[in-house]
Each structure stands twice: as C-alpha cells, then as structure tokens.
Image 1 (cartoon, one colour):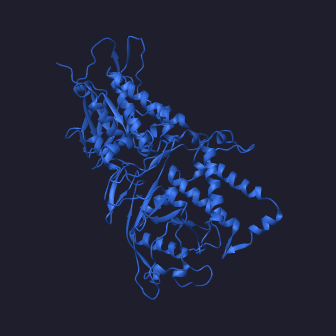
Image 2 (cartoon, rainbow, N blue to C red):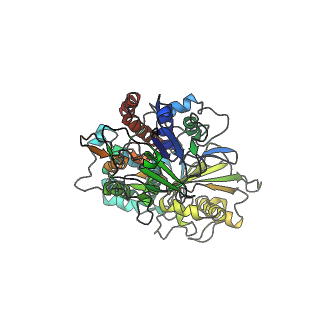
Image 3 (tube, rainbow, N blue to C red):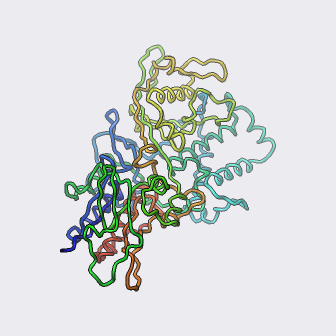
Length: 563
C-alpha cells in the first residue's frame, strides 16, 4: 500500500491559522507533499478580527489598529489589496486615539470642565512613567527602579510615581491648597487622582489587564511595536485575513468544526532510517469534534486563544489526552488573559428650539470620583466608573464608542440594551448638569431617564462585543501577569514532542502538536502582528522538518530581524 501524504490540520481560522495555512499551501512543493486543512469552530474566518457595520458605519468589533506601519507585513498586505482606500466612513478614520486625547474635553463628575493646566501635567506624568516602565529611551532604561522599593506590577509602579509627584510638591502651604475645593465636591488632589485614573483605565484597554496591579513590571519592557504611525484599515481588518485565505481552494477551511478533544501520543516512536508511515490508521494525533466525528493527523497546529487553553488544561475539560506536560500547563496558567469590549451607541441631537440642540458630541474624557467617595453620584452604574472616555468614532459621527476592560467588560456582556442606554445616559447627565434640572446635593441629574434631556440628545441603539463569554475565545488578548514572564510565551510556543536530532535507534514521533497565536509570541503578544508571525513560525517549522526549509529559513531570519 502506498504511503499517504503527511496530514497537517490547523485548528482555528484566525490570523495565525490562516497565515500558517497560506504559507504551507503556497510554498513550492508543499501542497503536493502535504494533506492540509483548517478546522474552525465558528461560522466565519477571522477569529478575534471581526469587521462589522453599525448604522451605516464600518467598525471593528475586535482588532482595530495596525500598531506601527514601519516594516509591518500587515501594512504591506493592506497596501497591496487596496484596503487603505475607502469612500465609506470608518471607525477612527480621523486619527489615533492619543491625538484625540490631546484635544479632548475632560470633564469631572458633576460637570466641572478641567483646563489643560490641570490635565496636561498629570497626563505627561503618566506617559513618562510608562516610558520608564517600557524602557523606551536610554534615560528610561537607566531609571526603571523606584528607590529601594521592590516593584512587581505596573500598578504599583504607577502608584509610587504618583505618590512621588505629590511628595515633590512639598510644603504645608501646598498641602493645604490641595484640600481647598476647586469646584463642587472636588479638591485639586482629587481631580489629579481622577485624571491619573483616566490614563490608567485607558492603559487597561491597551494591555488587556483588568487591573494594572496584575500586569508584570519587569516584562513590560519586552513588548514591541513597529515604528511609525498607528492606523486603522478603511475597508476593514478582515480584508487582510480574507486576502491570505483567498489562495486556499474551496473547502480547505472547514467552518462549524469545533474540536472538543485532542488525543496525542507523546511516547509514540518511529524507527530511524525507515520510511515514515503516514497511513491514516497510524497517525499519532486524533481530533474529536462536537458532532462525534474524528480526524487523524500527523501534525496539528493549535491557534486557539489562551483563554480556551486555560480552560482546556483543566482536568474536567480534558481537551488534551494525555494532559500537556507540566511546563506547558504552568506557562498557560501563569500568563494573563484579559477581557476588553467595545460599546457602540447610536445617538442623535434633539430639536427642542427652546432649549437648543446638543450639537456635536465632544471627544470626552470622564473623571470619576473614586467608587468609595461620599461625593459620587450614586445612580451612575459601577460598570461605567472605570470607563475612560466616550466619543464619536470620527468627527460628527452619529455613533459613539466607549471601551471596557476587566470585570466591567464582562458585566457589559450580561446587560440588555435598555439597561446600557439608561446607564450611559445617566452617566452623561452627570457630566452635563446644565442640560437638565438639578436636584439637591448628592442627587442625580437623570435627564435622559425622565425625559428632561431627550430634547437635547438621545441614545437609540446599542452594539457591543462579547469576547469574554464567547466559548470560542473566552477573552480578548494576553498579557504578562505578575508571577509570569516572557519565558512563558516561549514555553507555550514549544511544539510537542520537539523535533530533536538525537542519535538513538528510535525517536519520538515529532511535532505532533504545534502552538501558534498571539499568546505564543514573546514581543508582539496581544496583537495581530504576533498572531501573524506565530503562524509563519509554525508553518516554517514543519517546512524545515520536511526539508522544504530553504525559503522557510530565510523567512524566519527576516521575521526576527524586525523584532
């Protein structure tokens, strides 16, 4: 009986999986040598890339930014397929969020508008502290320590930095001035703390860490972005994945095929010097699907999210049989994996001639009282209190956007549209008290709730992402948690069993399970770049194993030169 071709199955049709498939299929000689396919548990490709439309606007439910265009392969692909050109409006078409923040209207709970003299020193302090933590400059690399204090997390480092800022002001006179009320129930120190919290809450959405005290300090300097401008993609991020997948033949990607169990044979051995038997019955990996079907393979590239892996290594899950080795399980357990969600709201200005129109909705940063403050407006829901901003997706757009992270992001997923609209409306009312009738102190101006502000503006429709509860993802992206390190990304990226060149009479059947995805890239984790590079890495690993590695090795060198 003639030996069958080596069977390679890729689990997941996100950026990593489709990139690996595209590389394996298009490398000269590879598609003739391999029996290839992609199995995807959902009904679409793209994974955590999901371009959508909301009220006529093109938006991204998941991945949004190309983080630096200098040398970015994703930017090159977007250029080649003309995805950077569109006549249709799209999310963030008028610039990077940081640029908007410099022109933002920062309001404090109760309606007090903060001027630049209040906001800029604190924002600059936060940026400098993050530059030190990330080792972005030679000066910052020499000043990562905070005195003799042992710093374990970004949160503790930022707290020390803010405390030192206040201490540097010094003097009894300044301390007394800090306690003088600036407006309403706000003192200057309280406002500075609230502005600093805006920066922290924005950083939470960047990193995926629901709490910055869980984000490892030492590892922060390893994260990398490409140089140059950060951009969104006018025709949608999904067009990049679609372009990569377009070279694959019909049926290559099998949708609705969710894997529930992966059986592998860590002790399976083959004789050296003999023809490797790739007959279906002898293949070492067996995939079980929800419909009861089974697929056997020689090699499986797993590109599922870290959240799915975290559940998969639990004993009751039994995704892997036998379980993964302790080193791999420990890396999966230690690494952080967060939930970040986006909330889109359609809004429209009112037409009450007596009160006037609300006009253009501002790019608004929201400074909240601390949740334990006696001065907070109690009708603002808790899940809004760590939201940094609310703004149109581009100038004059009728769609607003707000980002949520951590437990607030998870709570958002559980709320119905009416509750969300009421909660956001109540929050907006507290920042624009002049637009509604004020009640007694510590009451709440709930204009949109009782109709007072509906003549000014109205929130009509809601669209939100639900990455945390989606069983195919169970979260958004990875980060280095306290107690973890960049080494854990490397451990997660190691294949099982490894393709080692031993000289015994027999060796373990190699590369049964390979791992790709953003959580397997040490420097570009949490990004589409990390997912893309990891897909290439694992495809090249297999190409080199089967001696199709000349071009593959060149690709690997090119990839690591840009890191």
